[in-house]
Image (cartoon, rainbow, N blue to C red; front, side, top):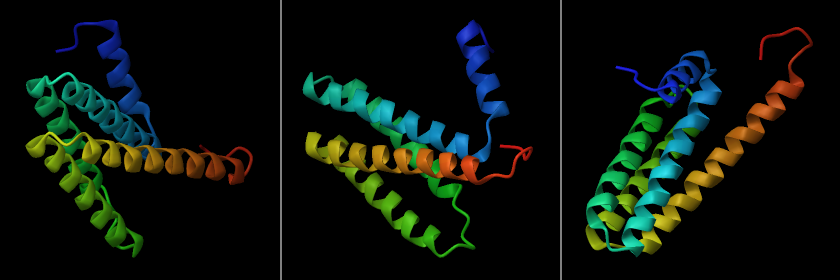
Length: 131
């Protein structure tokens, strides 16, 4: 049930987003949860760390499920996602901030690459074409 205007806005944003925008939203969510987990590790709040790392892992699982396996690159992306999951699990089990920060770096790079790709695609789209 949606209670706040923010929740209604969020649902509307997701429902009207393009597939590329949804991928960026997923990366941004994983980044937000990973940063919160790092903060939890630094403060030794392991309950918050665990909760946020599990959310970041769920998003990476969603990114893996969204891969189009008809493209060769999807196999490489799947391996990278698996490695990010490994890092997040290690961060959770061993309270390893460095592993969480490494995963965060990959998530930020991928998000930024998607943003650049979407911008390039929008600039290359013919006038009047849907973006």
